[in-house]
Length: 475
Image (cartoon, rainbow, N blue to C red; front, side, top):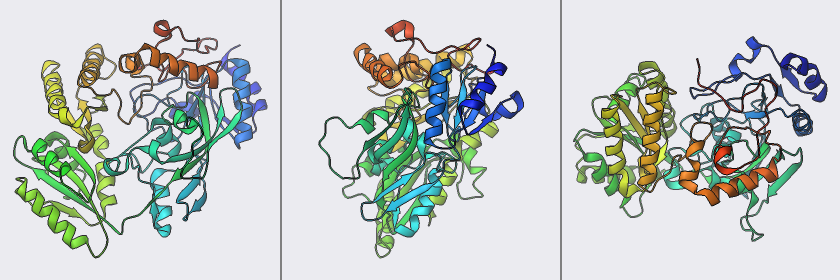
């Protein structure tokens, strides 16, 4: 049965809106990666019960389902396989309950990260993870990829802030895990097994997230590093400082700074690498803490006074436009997300420089310096043989330095082949065992996260008539 013939059956199975037709589905073919697919349809379920009905239909027809929020994922996590059905959760955007005493919030998965941040201000609370795409990315996607952001230097990644999940498994069953308590000793915590699962185990319908007390003041500093080689000295000095007020320590190399400066209306100056710092304080301590930070920077050899952002959020929103700046000037490129032990950052920088020379692909590097997490961008076509060879060398090199192939962007379709190299065969097999328990028919986001079946003997993915099992590079 062809795709068109299956649409009436789908519209009968669910109560929500069913979108089909090539023109209507164009926006669902791709995410922020270079990959694309051809979905059969997109469904906007009415409610969790309607989502369960959709999953049951998908099981009976062996149709892949791909959950999607804002489509801001960078490794193809929300790109559908040909013939798959996209589940659009962007309209499930309700903030259901805020508990200021327990410092918890219940939300639907389509809530935009920055919208939650703004809604929590009147409660004196905030949700610390703030990815660079926080103006558009959704909380469901943040949990699905264990997203981070600048403030993870102090507060950690999304995983540390998930207290409960409600989701529909690939079996069609609806489950709840987690409790509204600060401590629980009831075996392994199931919530943690779903964080970072990229929609391959279940589809989130509700999230319970922990919150932090908002600092009275959060000030941003843009620090120019005009001296060659200053970055490691300054970063080490700031990290070694006792009782540091820093909640973020970001970095942009000179090329990235130059490009972002063009979008900054003078708030960022080009011509040198830049560190972005966030200083937390009370109202009464702000002046003292800023003066101490400026004095420490001078002691570390920083000769130019930093640009001060009285509202750190304005600085992070600007920093989040780094990719946009490179989109304008460089266009499609290999862009990555690797992390190494902080002590080996110098070796990672050297690796990036070597690859840029050998592949004749100028590099643009920014990222979360305080955690050893860099986002190297290379001006070379993604999906091309040379581009993918460069990507593989970078990822393998990060592993050789004791690092990871993905610090915060996820694995998606782009990097799953290297998962066994980081985890090992036994650990990869455990991933597949958990997948088989939650999604025995392999209908949820096939072709993502899990390594190739030929290598690990995992069960087959669904393949509707004429459908591929994963997204493909654009032609």
